[in-house]
Length: 107
Image 1 (cartoon, one colour):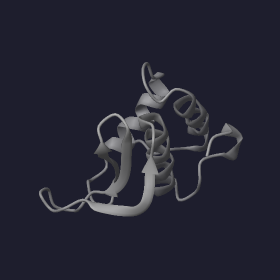
Image 2: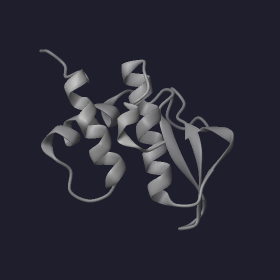
Image 3: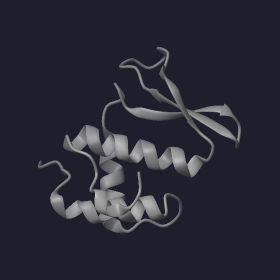
């Protein structure tokens, strides 16, 4: 069975996610998100709640369930949307080997 991979045609979905990280997703974006979320846990970026509804940090999952999450020092988000956007961009880079297209206007 062929496994879905991110292709250059999927770059349009970056702008869609960055403009609206919550709510309805187009089928194409949902396919990209399923790929990002379906990867094995080792090294996957995740948000860490530092203060509920106010502050989040960034971490990476361990290879084995139950092992501690590796927190990345110096990274803090003051909105959940900001954190979700950054995790999306980091996972994109991990899967494609390159940064998301700059034409999205988001960082």
